[in-house]
Image (cartoon, rainbow, N blue to C red; front, side, top):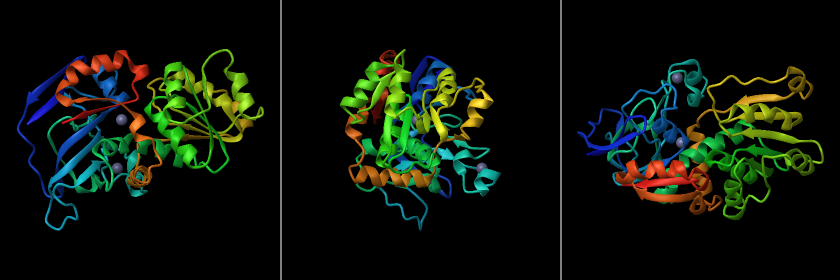
Amino acid sequence: MKAVVCEKPFELTVVDRPGPVRKDGEVMIRIRRVGLCGTDYHIFGGTQPFLSYPRVMGHELAGEVVDSDGGSSLQAGQLVTINPYLPCNRCIACRKGKPNCCVNVRVMGVHIDGGMTDFVCVPEAAVIPVPGLTPEEAAMVEFLSVGMHAVRRGAITETERVLVAGAGPIGVAVALLARLAGADVSLIDTSQTRLDYARTALGLPHTACVGPELDDWLRARTEGDYFDAVFDATGNAKAMEKGFGYVAHGGRYVLVSVVKDAITFADPEFHKREMQLIGSRNATHHDFRLVIDLIRAGELPTRALQTHAFALHDLPSVVPDLIDSRDGVLKAIASL
Ligand SMILES: [Zn+2]
Ligand SMILES: [Zn+2]
């Protein structure tokens, strides 16, 4: 079978490899679509920590069941997505029902080989049917679920004023899902291109570009109160620090994106607000199921979320272009 291997930073090659052998408890899946995201661009660019090369990338996956154990409820040919966050099922987080932040989590396409290949074998518990979804939609469930997890962590309720910083795929997912939860959503970014797309194609009307007028705009949006909940999806330490100041007194700050730097904040600013600072990591099966239901109900603009399509074997030539034009790329999906 073919696999796209990131041999080392800036080097992607299409190789022939033997297919995987299915073990007991695993399901063999023929991969049909793979979404690309920031993690993949970081792996390609050599800026993803905790990663050894060579690596087969790909954690936003849609595929068809080929084979599973007798007694499995999965049918051959059935379209599924995969929860790529494989938990250990033993650690403190797993025991508390939080496998998304498992101490020993192995993420497909990061710590272990992912789905940019014809066939994978994964534990049956990681396989999630997607009745009524297209293959493209099935490949979008994962990144939308990361947004869903963040919105659930933020416990957004109706009529709350929510600020999302960062209009990349995760920020947009958070914004769309917070709005579905009934919130009044504002979206900010440093890229006017991204904000224009969110406004015109995704139906997120309240956007502002980071600049000298931003603070006036944020105050005007909230009658000077700032926001009940702020979500950071910027991947930028300075932006994360700035976000503390956008939280209303009594509000929550949810950090979705990850940076390797330390971030600092002034305790009086934090304390006087009685702010809740909340991390959000990965997603759970529950988030996947909620997203699948919303997509099936037509509540998410999946066609507009996908901005690019290409064949997986073209990936080595496509990835540098996608990175160069990143402000115009929301979700790129490879077919195979
Ligand atoms: Zn991703
Ligand atoms: Zn665990």
